[in-house]
Image 1: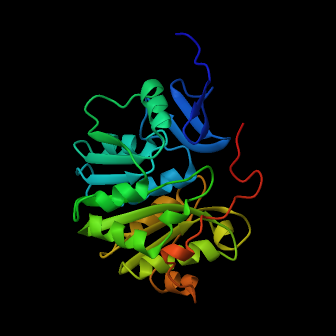
Image 2: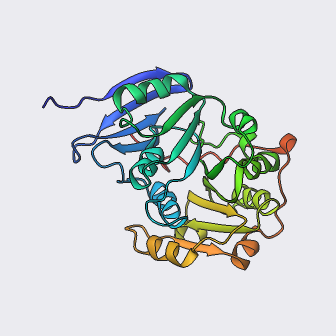
Length: 281
């Protein structure tokens, strides 16, 4: 077998690189303008390399009985890591992916093709525009993992966007978001305030060092009208190579503190990560 070689291509929103993992035969890292976006192992789609991706995977695992098919909508595509994970762990699931960068999607489909019969439909569309056009009560799970470079775009950080997410989800549906922030957590608190105004239940998953304000990092947020099995979730995240804390109920309300929901005119992108926070190669 010939040695895999890196691929670099100009895409709509920057320069994308696909770099082979020397330790895993058909595994690839996708970066855009040097920021890691996705990691995919074509032979083992249940392998989630990034810590935040594993945490999203743990939530997906506990949302329904093992193997049950779900209707999942993804805002942000990257290299389609989580759609591949859902297709492998919950065969028969119907999935939609909204990704604004057409050239990036074309690169991924060309070099990292989805398996036959994956049930994944790809849409070149702005995430919020796609969400606003999606039918009500049409998804069991909605996953927001949208980064323009290393920042969540402002138009995806408002209360109106959270309301659209709630509209698209079924009554027992669950919203998941990958966010990034550092102390004093102005952005993360505002995002939780948005969701608290719309959903009854909130869960926050992050490394203790991030929550204690020691460093910039990812936080996975879960919002729904039903309870999520936080005990099962806590067991999974605690057993991870990089353990995380699972906060819910009063602890999340305390974390939100005096933060208020953000309306569209005042919405801002997530903060710029400090140099070296996520950069690769």
